[in-house]
Amino acid sequence: MGESGLWVLLESPRGHVLRESLEAAVACLSLAQRLKRPVAGILTGILPAQSQCGSLLSMGLDRLIHLGGTEDNNIPEGSILWTLKGIFETQKALIFFVGATPLGQRLAPQLAVLLDIGCISQATYFRLIGDTLQVTRPVFHGRAAEILRFLPHSTGIVRVFPRAFEVSSESAATGITEVSIERCPCATPSARIPEAETMEIILDSPETMDMEDAEIVVAGGKGIGSKEAFVLLEDLAKALGGVVAASRVAVDLKWAPKERLVGQTGRKIAPDLYVACGISGASQHIAGMRESRYLLAINTDPAAPIFKHATWGIIGDATRVVPAMTHALQQHEK
Image 1 (cartoon, rainbow, N blue to C red):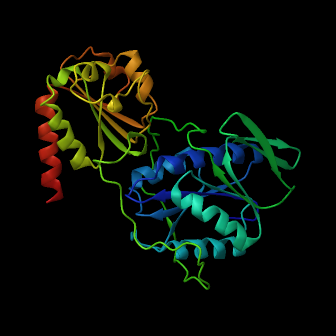
Image 2: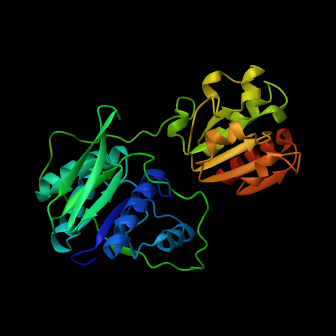
């Protein structure tokens, strides 16, 4: 990585990098560009597909390193911490970025204590004054901001504030068919940290998951046709491991509760995948989901505005397309 390189932790618990980690990568790359320094991505969890690894390199990352050396997702948190400590001590980074995730929230301060370096959380903006890096973060619930700084030429850890750095919703065209991933075996902790110990990792249930936390959202609009048809969306959401949302019309018709409303007067969400079923794509609805990474639109009207924003589009009746998708997913799992 080099003495003056920058690092970013890229969490991939289900085989694709979390949005929060991509936000940290955007922040890291913006600073690296100003410093003219290389960037290394440290992958944890299940190794993503070659296409996403290629997208990471096309964003500007110079290297990708996978902790554990296998596709195993069950690496103990303590092993990750001690592995990062070992890499830091042998291949010092200038600044190490982590995303606004529970794992990042725990690892960042612990690693800073072990290495005796500075740690700044909830960063929203960076500025260079000579050789000094200044970091802005909100205080008093966002009513004010404070500016912190690292000493010149010092090493530090930065945890970015959620949604502070925009991730492009368009997948990068990489042209990269094979990506070289470096492997780093995980170390055994040489000491136990008694304050916190992970006993088990339990993923949120789609039935109770909040929309803002969901990586996949299946939304229905007027084209679904009835409250009973919303059951089809629930089946698809369950097969995808996501949650169900609704447009303004669907909520007004009482096909879905108002808590599920996505739009200008509803919830603002940014999932990895947003499946719009029978939704025309009015500007009020787009305002609530425009930050989605990918959009799959299903509509009978080929001129529906939703297709202008879609990554993929299916022209057809959602009440027929959705069950077919659900069936295909269920068959694939078998």
